[in-house]
Length: 391
Figure 1 (cartoon, helix red, strand yellow):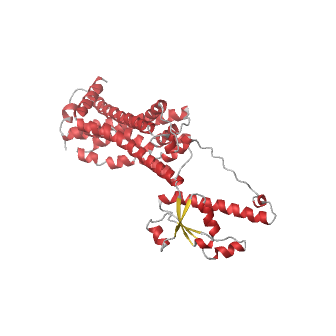
Figure 2 (tube, rainbow, N blue to C red):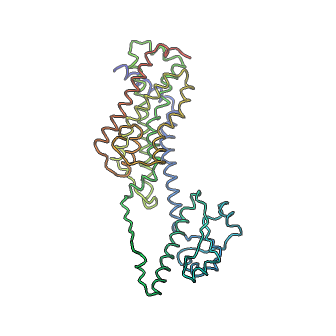
Figure 3 (cartoon, one colour):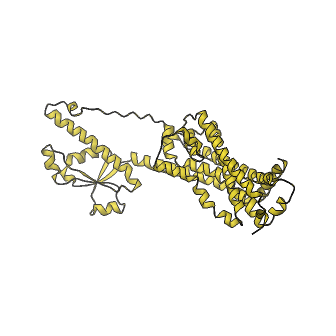
């Protein structure tokens, strides 16, 4: 135990001597990720709010065929504009978001009390089209209901007769749960900060020292190799947890300065929530440090060890991508799957939902158990004589 503690202090001391690496690891990473995510969310929320509130500019083809409809739209915060010469090209070139086309037969069908055709031109692949499209569709539905009711009244029929079923919506979602929809990548950023926060140190402590031929004298000491590896691994895990903590504090700071009214939702960034998130990341930090140490023990150089970084960065992203493509209901067995458990529970914490004791116990236990298995494999590799031989 004393040997492991000595090696841990030695590795951390060596790391903090390299001030540039420490500054990049502890400032750039924990600050850039949260700043980028919060900035994007704020930009999207501000843009959507502006699109939803400002007058909607709507080019109309064939406005003369439905003057009453055009006049009604003008009273609903819609600015009617002349139609472009080539409507299809205007949509494809992103000159217009939505164009309304009223065919010549609209007036005749209207007079005969038959459904009058209207066509909405838009590009479904464009993100900017969704808000104006929803506004146009919503307004046309309102106009449709109003005119249908007037037709029934003119014929002496109660408009309610045409509505045999009245569908009412009751949204039981909370502002916190709606926040989770927009914060889908939050678990990935937090998990990645803990999973790979100590990767550079873990690689340098094994593959780097092996390449510099400083690992062989250390392994030649009377200290057990398992204790030496545990010290190196502990230093990497400690640095990973420090990176994760700074990332969490950055998120709390950034979200504290943004009013909930601008974002349209509120997330739980209390100190209790920050503590819960840090607790969830702890086993992932240990597991990530063990895995990187294991990979570093199988490589012959620092360059070869760094080649695994792309794969390691993808690993925490897999649960996020799978859940975005195919959302599933939270079940207790998910808590036993490391990375997936953290992904689900992080969202529950920021939504302000209750995490049961069983979920906590299974998630933390499974993560530490997996880390222990990887630690045993890495310790076995540390006992190989080939590890002390430089490339």
